[in-house]
Length: 129
Image (cartoon, rainbow, N blue to C red; front, side, top):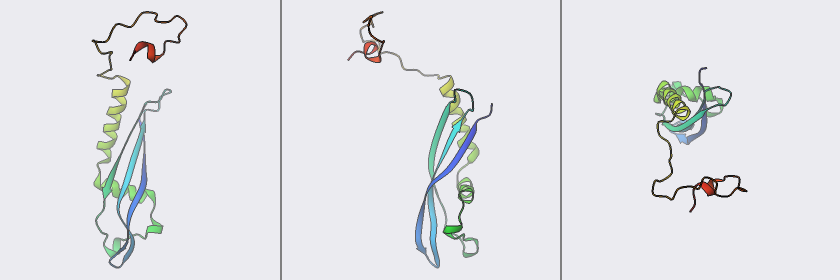
């Protein structure tokens, strides 16, 4: 099943007065959440910042008229959307089949096979301090 990606604009950094223009977006923080859409979903996410050039007067969109879709298009003009999504897809695949895992330090004493028959087998028993 194909991954799905949800892009969001988290906040806009705005200059209140920029020449003759008011409330000019200078940068934004964006984020992306990815999921593999399987029953036990594997997810990944990332975020970043995009800086924007001062708009030309004819291309300026009033702050109150901005939409998230429009600002995302500005972001994608600065950030390679495909590269970001491919990176998240790789992270999801790595989570499903990790190449690296955490093992018990070899210098620690062996863990008893049944340290306490009445215990629930908590992490504390497996990794004593």
